[in-house]
Length: 81
Image (cartoon, rainbow, N blue to C red; front, side):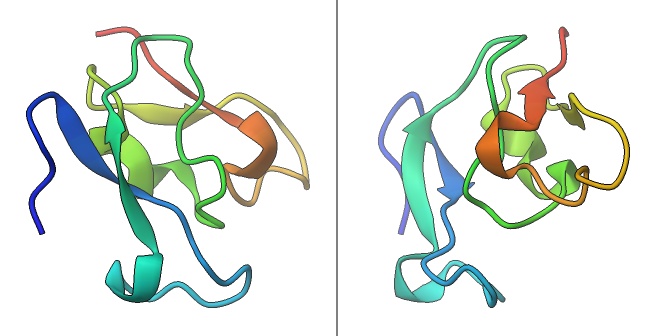
């Protein structure tokens, strides 16, 4: 389904291990985020899956090293436009 005005469809994986598509509650409608805000949190995915969550169209890792596999726990942030 479509999200309402000002909202975008954001990943929100119901299963911590398997999230192939938005079916079964794996996505939710969320307000678009500004630069510096977290993106992709709870998606179990890298930031490339959450670009549309950001007003700038860019969700990027805000961490380094081995823990940078996904955006969970606030490890990704929206880049400035």
